[in-house]
Length: 377
Image (tube, rainbow, N blue to C red; front, side, top):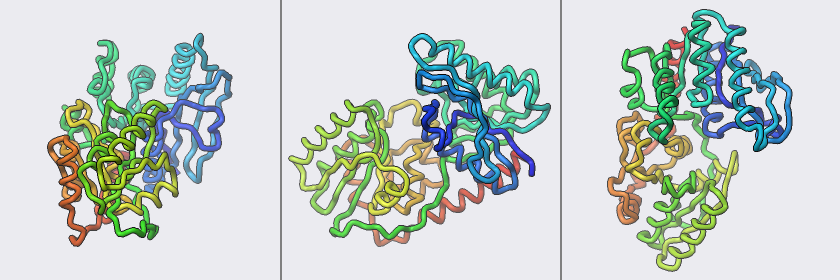
């Protein structure tokens, strides 16, 4: 069986004690893409330069994650206030050396776009001339202001890539200037079978699942909408944030609950099967976020796919990345970022209409398999 290298920050569940630097949203999507590469007959080798966040040295190793999928981890230096920068540079050096000595001309390699991977990838490609399929989830300079050398190198990475995997059509329009081969995958198209879990109280259950980061503002907007809903509704807030963010959210929920007949609750952080069962117990998913944020132009909210994969109807802020996507016809959009309009959009959902979001997600998955097969061919 042929194999392909997949570069990105990754760690195995059974290696969690090493506390290597990873991001859940990234590894979830990498897992999904790897499963589709396996489906078309490829062995997948994740190559991860993830450094530890522990003050301890760890050896490099290769771990078999499942049949045909492997993970290569490099040695990592202890992480403390004296060695942080050295640890990061060390991981980048090891990745560069690996690419230099373990790749060949025209070999296809997938790499998850990251500011911490740019330099080793760019210079190794210049020397070894492998074929780079760059997976681009967002343009980082649209999210934060970085020094000019960083933004310049990011632009060089977009230019040097031979093919792309984009998270939205808008990223293709913006970055694929030379019309190179590409595929678009919004997130994980993992359709979840119906668990038949439902709240038995005759209420319409609305859920916001995601970050409590006040800068993004999604959880606060979802909570505020509850003030304009009646006793027929129950709004749930689940997700993650700092202790300060969670306390602020709980205080907001307590304050709003005194002013509305709608039930509003904070239901913690749920994962795995517990998360799926809870989501499927609800009827409507909320994708609420700051509409003026620059990253909205090119990034796709992963929560939208999570809701659709579990059969929920979705209320979303109208942003181009979603409105011009293949799933826009499944969504209920609101335009003004006000609690009144979010609530109004929730209330106008007609549950008697035929609705099958899982079918659309399944078709997107089938299309992605065809597209990734063409890119790898």
